[in-house]
View 1: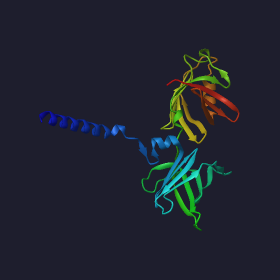
View 2: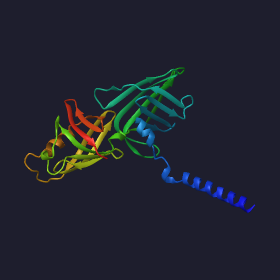
View 3: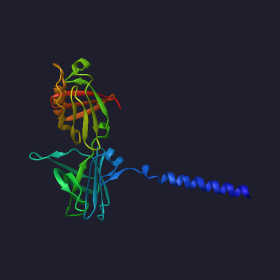
View 4: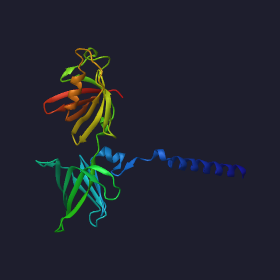
Length: 260
């Protein structure tokens, strides 16, 4: 009998430990106004609105709209390319499925959440209706592009303006950048001077802005200035074979190798 009681007590302790481990706050998935980390990796743009509450997730495979609106609790649309306005940074998406249709407009304009007061860089307008309805439901809210999580790393320069780089092209070591995708910031070494700044990200668009550099005197022939200029001229990027390639409409500017 004593052995049975001891076994029951031991089992109870094991179960209690498992529950305690599962309730560890460090294991919870990080969430924000625009969803979980998994959402931000899967979807390139997310938005929310209030009165009534609605949420939008835009990915390369589908566009998901959820709300507290009767008949529009969850709608999935196929992904589509944006229609760009000529006179402003506005992208429009016209989407439809078997039951509903919508027009989504994303404008680069500071937007404040009507409930939380949080500031977002994009204003979002949606006109949506079920096929059986005559009138469109008009909704407004705020949104944010989710910076490509694959950029979040340390990158060392291999090519500059189409040519392989060598230590002799710089002061002591090859240029490198460390990108913080969560904060849209970067820092690094230009080959002579320390550098830092911000990144601007939209789907398939990447720009390095507000670049700050220390003012150390560089040796003759040092390509620090060429590297920084190429970084500032970047408009897009691609990945392959543990490499990050930065380009613009004129061609390839920089190739980095992943080191972390």
